Amino acid sequence: MNQALSTIGVSPRVLAIKAGPPVVVFLAILLAPTPEGLTEEGKRSLAVMALAVVLWATEALPIGVTGMLSLVLLVLIKAVADIEVALYGFSQPVPYFLIGILTLGLAVHKSGLAERSALYLVRLAGGNPTRLYVQMLISFAVLTFALPSATTRSAILVHVYEQVMEKWRIPRESPLNRAVMMAMGSLNRLASTALLAGGITPVVASSLLSQSLDVDFSWTRWFALMALPFYTILVVGGAGVYLLYRSGFRSGSGVIARVEAAGPVALAEKKAALIAAGTALLWFTDFAHGLPPAVPALIALVVILTPGLGLLSWREFERDIGWSSFFVIATSLSLAHALIGSGAAAWFADTLVGGVEGLRGSPILLLLALSGAAAVVRILMPSIVGYLAFVIPVAMATGASLGLNPLVCGLAVVIVGDSAVYYPAGSASSIFVFQRSGIRAPEVFRFGLIMTGVSIAVLFAIVLPYWSLIGEGLTR
Image (cartoon, rainbow, N blue to C red; front, side, top):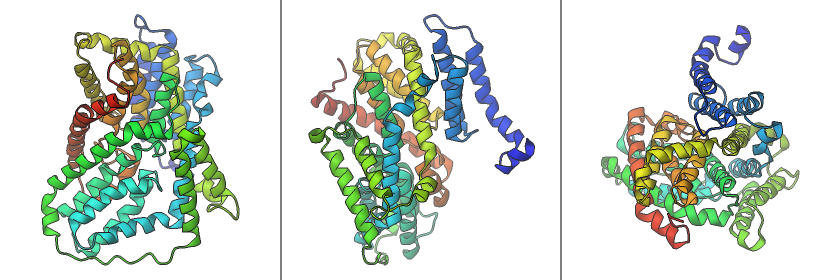
């Protein structure tokens, strides 16, 4: 057994140390007396959710394995009626939608189109560091339409901007380089969440919201609700990075960079552009044809994988797609479904309601309390999937109990939770950026706290009035 574990790079002692706390939490909840108002199934569902959340946070197991373990436990301890209920997430379109957009992003990346776009944006900056920085922020939003995954964009852009810093002879520890890398590690991901096809956060969040409200989000509805919040936070956060590292922009002015041209446009790039544009057009016009967002994504997948017509072989698809995301999303949906179906989410919400009952007459203060609680949970829970699966059902049930619009409560905790990165390894898109940047963990955490304040301020000053104008007021 020890030899088998060593072959996968994990010693039994390290595995026991990492897995110990999650198991203790699981058993403590499972063996505790059932609180009044909570069903036995609800307590068991909470125990499994707590185990999954802590395992996702500590990464004691691969995240996909944690998800599948959670489903097995739901059945074994009878938290759900049968295996079909446990596999609820795999029957939803969301995991397949994600596979479609991951395939599209992989095709755009492999074709060279994404790197060409990035190089073009950098060349436009000339030798002005401020212009380079502003165009980089714009590129986060622009490239999202062709390359939804923030992780893939970061993987491409980090090399491009490292090349620029090298040609400008800017040291790795300089304020200018740290500003560029801090923005790439903390802000790049915001552009993805503005789009329904933008990666794991909007995919999981929209599905959980739809599941609680029994409605479907179209691409255009998600964009109408979330584009203003996340683009505003991106702009304000970008200004914050500029002010924090402003000395770097002054000292770097006047330098000139030569970034080599990418060469002639290849046939693969033209194909990738046509497929991406066609898919985006179907998403933009969903109000006319009524196709769910997963259908255009799967159409793109079929075209990309068709021999002679597409851009990827089936072997590349099997090897290079992030399959762990598929299992994490499906299993998180199943866990949230179990919490809602067993009444655990409603019970947890009622418990929170008792703590803020005195604020019932003030909707703004109620939402502020929910936002603050969500921020604390996010700091303690680095896994965005675990955070969303736990917080969204609770926030929506709490809001509904207090007379608030549950959709607004759910969207609010998405904004607060996804706007900040507190740790260098806080997200897949930030890990290798911060590793290469020379930015230390306290610096990341400090900026994460700043972004939490920015997200809450933007939520109350701009987003709530805007949502009210488009028919989603804070109160029902």
